[in-house]
Length: 178
Image 1 (cartoon, helix red, strand yellow):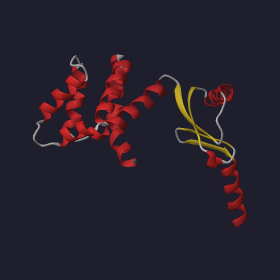
Image 2 (tube, rainbow, N blue to C red; image 1 turned 135 degrees about the vertical axis):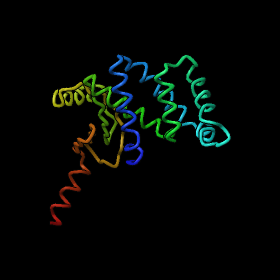
Image 3 (cartoon, rainbow, N blue to C red; image 1 turned 180 degrees about the vertical axis):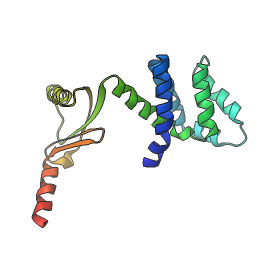
Image 4 (cartoon, rainbow, N blue to C red; image 1 turned 120 degrees about the vertical axis):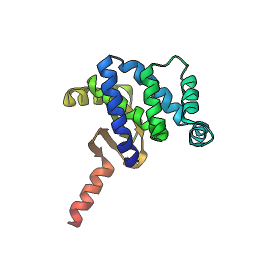
C-alpha cells in the first residue's frame, strides 16, 4: 500500500499543479474519478496488461470509456500513465489528487470511528470542534467499531486522536508494565 502511494503521489501532484494553473480542478477531479473506477475493473486491468493491444489501442479504448470528448491534457496524462505501466495506480492517484484539492480548498477529511452509532448532532458537534481546532472545514466519515468498547478515534491525515476506552486501557496496561 505504501509503495502504491509513493508511486501515485508524483502523478497526483503534477496533475494538481496543471489543473490549478489552468483553473480546471473540477474537470480533472471528474476525469480522475472516472479513470479510477475504470482502473478498478478487472476486465480493464486484463485488457491493459494484455500485450496483444498496443498502448494507442488501450488509450483509445479508455478515452472512449470516458465519453470520447476528453481534453488533450487528460489524453497526454493517460498516455504517460500507460507508457509507465501505472494503470493500476489510477485509484490512488485520484485519491491523492482529491486530498490536494481538498487541502487547497481549505477542507480536510476526518475518519471518525465510534464504538456506538453517533447521532447527527454528535457528528455535527465533533465536526465543529475539529473544524475550530484545525481551522479548516472538516468532512466526516463515520464508522462503527464495537471493539473500541466506548468513545471514538479520529484520524485526520497523520493526526490520530484516540479517545476510546480500548485506547485508554492499552495505555494503562503499557504504563503498568513499565
